[in-house]
Length: 161
Image (cartoon, rainbow, N blue to C red; front, side, top):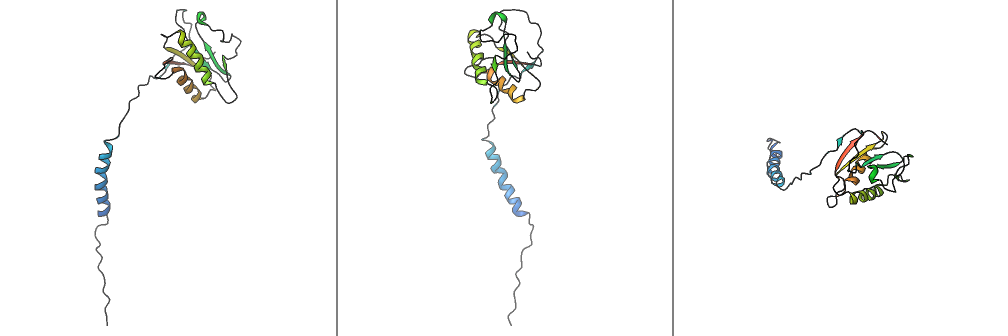
């Protein structure tokens, strides 16, 4: 009669294949890490100030207040523009049906910047119910671009119109 032969299975350590894989992955990951480049972006965080009675000087004293109705733009009275709303409370740039008109805001800010090229600071205020994203977009649109900076020195305030 034929006997069945039993195969002997090597019951070695089952961690050896995993250790081999880890030993091969470590040099591969270290080699790939050389190609990772970091970029440092220089950002000036906005300062928080309170609005007070500033003396009338030759500076523009640009202030943008964001309300649920739109943007209110205030400047030194001697630099006031015809498109700026009077003290009736209506916004200079009213809110559109689909949201705030950031392009119109940037256009008006550019107009002010063209006449006051040396000015760098802007004061931005918002009502309590204005969304954080709206404040950030307002800061971005009033700062301008690296090619054409508008007012890069942004200060925030709690006060509104």
